Length: 158
Image (cartoon, rainbow, N blue to C red; front, side):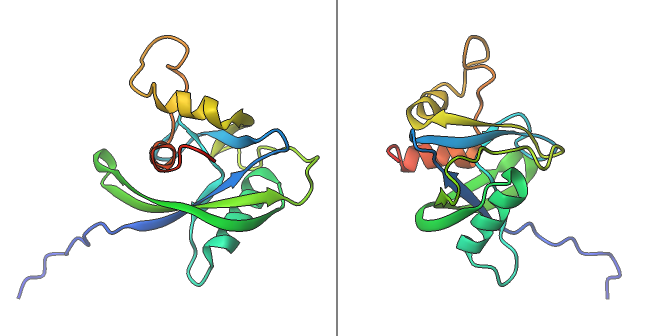
């Protein structure tokens, strides 16, 4: 009988991302920090907790990260996101949400996780996605988080 410790195989995790738009059709995105995807742009979101619905998760994560109270409206898409270099695999659920107070803007409430929040047009985000390999020029600092790249590929129109 072996007494050597066994290492558990990595397993997929469930992430939930909230698509929050303003009256001009812009989407809230923030620059990630301190985690995988650091330096890339992403939607508010996080891990689905045990027993939590993905709608509740989108609402909770948006409030925790941005201070925006939102109502989850519908499932947009689901992406399969493998970060091979980090040995991480996420299934990401994207939820369309609306702000309860359309005059309120996002705030950085978790500065260790997000540098800043911005309203960005969807077509502009799509153009960022088309230039992910650029290392110089105007798109060099506009890298998208892998689930965002997959969202844009699957849902070019929002």
